[in-house]
Amino acid sequence: MVSVDDALAMIDEFTPQPEVVHTKVDQYIIGSVLAEEVQARENVPAFRASIVDGYAVVAPKDGNLKGVFPVVGVSHAAPGEIAALQEGQIARITTGAPLPPGATSVIMVEDTVLKTMTDDGKEEKEVEIQAEGVREGENVREVGSDVKQGATILSKGEQISGVGGEIGLLASVGVAEAAVYKRPVIGILSTGDEIIEYNRPGALKLGEVRDTNRITLISAAKEWGYEVVDLGIAQDQSNSLEETLRSGLRRSDVLITTGGVSMGELDLLKPTIERSLGGTIHFGRVAMKPGKPTTFATVPVKDNAGQRVSKVIFSLPGNPASALVTFHLFVLPSLHKQSGIYPVGLPRVPVILGHDFYMDPRPEYHRAVLTVGPDGQLTANSTGGQRSSRVGSLRSANALICMPSGKGKMEKGSKAHALLMNAVRSS
Image 1: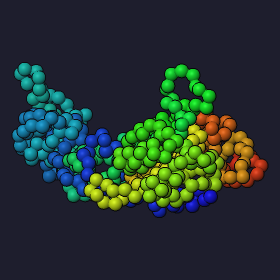
Image 2: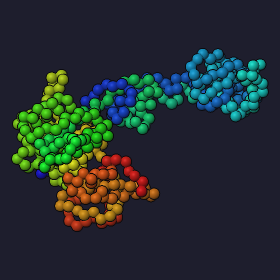
Image 3: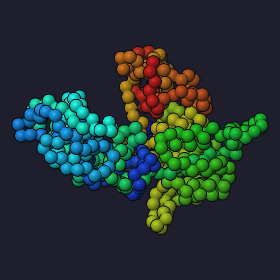
Image 4: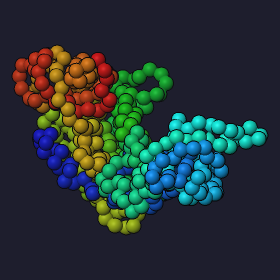
């Protein structure tokens, strides 16, 4: 039996390095990590642009711009040709529109007075300006003032999020394709003759168990942004299990199974991995609660190019709470490494316990709800009974409290650490 830290170290050691692929910059790149830095292909803005609504002018050398001036043109944000501006002339301009050739500055509309309109009453004809100290470049965004052509806009290792501005930044400088780390495809299956589809109509026969793990893990993997292949249920027969595993390895980069890893004589998964697939089991039991029978293995396979590569198999316990806890604790760091995400795994935060938590001889990952108070303090409250088969202990859980092994209890108000699985709620 290995410790959690030793298990995580082996996962890091034997998980394959990330693979670089080139992909289009579109909504499907969200969640990907850049495999190389990205340079701007063009200036932003690409032209001298007004930052206010007003009038483009040619600033005199003394900066004094007083009098009534003819309005000789209009510059809108829409593309189009603009006539050159001479000293003594002005042109109406909107925010974001290009300056006419020859213009040096923009006077805000609030600093002007409309004097006359054109005969048809549709446009300004003359505008009075009373301005002193007008500088060249006033109220103007210069070419490349936001982003210079050739400048590094995103660094290797940065993740493109759906809520940040990374994808908009790429689009703004004309980057249509980027080198990113390929996100692994995950194959998920359940094992056991007792397992039936969760949505099968009718009452259960004696000994039958609905498959809650598969849909739960599929949902969790998708929530973290990964594509999933549903491999169904494999029966407790070595030939059936081997065939399902081989199919899964062909269709996915990482295999996750649940069940079939305890000490019973019908648990065939470990011998199938070692003898039939030629794999290596790096650990098969972990000193923790829940999730002791978690198994981590690698299997040699040939990729589409005929090259020998290693693929990862995680065999998680069959109990629902154990399966989801070990997915977040062990599988997610492996997925992150293969995706180029660092640091790997769930973020770790300090918390205050909202009530007494009883300890266990093994280190425990206690399902809990974290809330944040008005003072910014995170408080952890248990989801209730923590039996590994109790799927209800996962309801509303957004964190795992990292409890050390021991006797007695950790008292209300004690400090602890938690692994964040989801967003924190306000108290």
